[in-house]
Image (cartoon, rainbow, N blue to C red; front, side, top):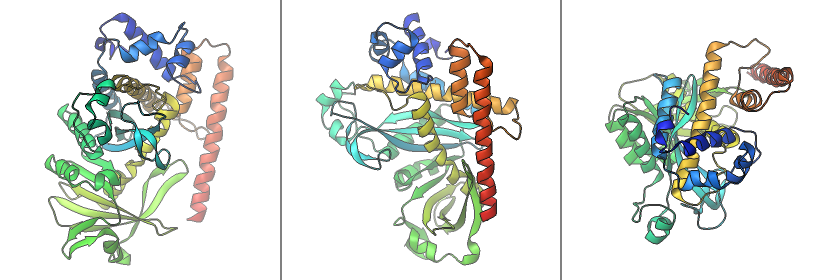
Length: 409
């Protein structure tokens, strides 16, 4: 809180922001202005609503503070910036940016609000460092509707890749460095984003569709056609990173493309189902296949952020309509999640757990923080005993997964 204290014009909203952060970190089953206000001891939700709607403070400046906080504590010279969007299901037509559109949250077209996030991921952990709300054309073509929702009276429509490029530029212009950007097919299929990254000397591993056409020495061919031309000896079995049930092993191959720097098509094959996935890759200098695989595997970190950000910090539980309220809520939720990620990284650095305990997770840190720091503690031994029991059980489960995986291999 001392890091962001200067962003508030008065002491009252600063103190209330601290209470809202504690509420976002709480174990409430549903987090909104009503439930958080009751949990922190306020008489009505009006103060929390005032903080999000009318209080004088700069959410974009706090967003920049979150970015500096994450990079400072999770710094990794080989960090990857991962961009992806997520949707929050909504009812009605008045919430800013809402319309019927596809969202991966539901897996189908629903009435939803979609936002693009950028996650900083490295060896010490991962956390979101930026966000942009996707405002569809149905909104940008209606200035009156935008004005009511707190947007600019004449907003300019921006695609999701354009929003991603805006966030990446903001990160680089702040003086930070990154060697890699990762994303799914929405971003890999956008030639303008790829050109922008190449122009700034940033490598990328971006997923593309099987119908994506790439130029090789044989001419322009579809990705799935190129996969059929890969010799059997060119496939290598490599791990895309460790997951909850062990390493994610796939078979990988790479095809050189014509273009600036080192342009390649990375192909991933599932050893069990033979299902293929494709990635458009670029790096200013040649890199080994293992590095491309590592960057491709880091893309799953954004899904982990969405899961933990929504489950632990209430990222998707905002019940607001106007843009300023949305930006303030998600920014504070990003800060709450970043706090858990930083504490987790520091604990892993300080303490090496014994073989019968898994390292502290963000979920466990949240439980202990609320139980031991925020709430009065009546029985510390009981709380710590449950913590050890959960971690011991998780350690056994993980060991079983690894043994099963080794037996199958």
